[in-house]
Structure formats: structure tokens, C-alpha cells
Amino acid sequence: MSRLSFRFSVQKILLVAMLLMPFPATAELDIKIWNALLAQAVTDGDVDYTQWENNPSFDALVEQIGTTDTGEMNRQQKLVFFINAYNILAARGILDGSSPDSLLGRYVYFKRDKYLVAGERITLHALEHELIRPLKEPRIHFAIVCASQSCPILQSEAYTLKQLDQQLEAAAKNFINDPERNQLDASSRRAELSSIFKWFEEDFVEAAGSLQAYLAPLVDNEKVADLLEQEAFKISYLKYDWSLNGKR
Image (cartoon, rainbow, N blue to C red; front, side, top):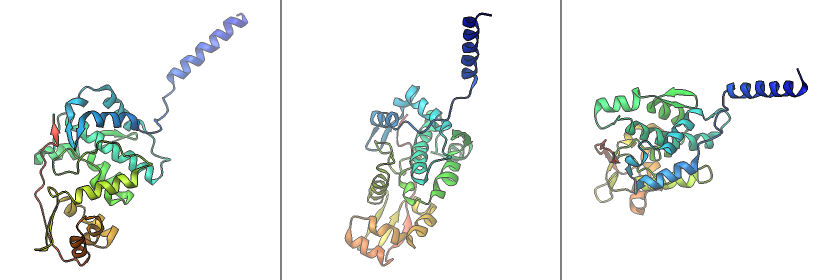
């Protein structure tokens, strides 16, 4: 065999070996793509899911969620990745025909349907309760969106590492001060709150000592804030509207 033929054979062997090697895990989610998709389909929290139907860019994000390696991520990086991943996969569930608008639908949507997240097939319920909540950031409850009217609104921009704290704080304040989701009447000292505060009360109590203490620094009305600091409100919870937060 000539030297040229030998070199060519070695090159072919190396090429075949490279093709057979598994591709490395994605370093992170492509935030630019997610931002573009959000700008395309989301207006004041109203989502036009038809924009993401059979959309190669959206499908690419879902694939990235499955292949991203979170092993070396710190807490903040995980928060950014998992919040964006949850919102994308919640939309994926809607596009796949699932819906939380009935009791059976909620079981299927949250606890039966599985998605590949960082190499593991898990449900939205597991993503929230096993991967996001253990990061001990109660403001995630105003950032992750399960495609329903009573959920926090889906923001028109992706969560990013650089802006994470500001974005979470804005999401919390916007949600708490939204009269469609929370109603606090200083004169009667009655508060009708989103059921989110009932379902995840332990997260807010752990962060601030009590639910009212958690709410106090986030409300815009000073008199309401003062009463919350005094634990002066009688709290009840609004019925949750599970209908779709947009059109499909």
C-alpha cells in the first residue's frame, strides 16, 4: 500500500469514527431563539399557539432541553434553564393536544405526559416539584406558566442569567398586584388570593415567616402593605380558571 493510500484509509477510518461518536450535550438553551418565538406569539400574556405549530425553531428548543447537561450548572443557571424549559414544554403539551382544562386533562397534562429534560424523561409535575422547587426560589411560582388563564402571564421575553432577579421580582409584583388574580380590600381587610398561594403556601412561609409577610413588600398599595405586615387580612382563595391562555 502506498503512503498516499494509507493516509487516505486512515482519514476514512477517523471520519467514520467521528460520525459514530455521540454528539456532546448542548451547553445551554438558545435564549435568542426563545426570545424570537415569544415576540412572535405572545401579546400581554395572550399566546397564539398556532405560531409554534410545526415550527422548526420551537422543535429545536424542545430538543435542546432534552440534551442540555445541567450537571455543572450553579443554582442561578438551573433556575434560568428550568424556568424557560417548563414554559416551553408546557406549550409543547398544548401543541400535542393535551390540556389542563378538566380534571382528567390536568392529570394527563401534568402527571402523565413526559418530556426529555437534561437526558431524563419526566413530567411537568416532576420538573416543577423535583427540579425547580428544591432550588428554594418562591418567585418561580410567578414565572412558570401552565398555559391557563389564572396562571401568571407568559412574559414576552425569555428569562436570562443577567436579568434573572429583576425578571422574577417584576413577575412577582405584576402577579400580586393584578386585580384579576388577587384582590386585597383594605377597608374590609379581606383578601381573595390566587389559589397558587394556597397550593404553595409552604414556599412563601419558608421565605418570609408567613404568607402575609411575604406579600407585604410586593404590593403597590402602602395601606394594604401595612395591614399585611400586621397579619390583618382574612384570606380566602379565588377559583382557578384552567381555560387556555390564548388560542390554539
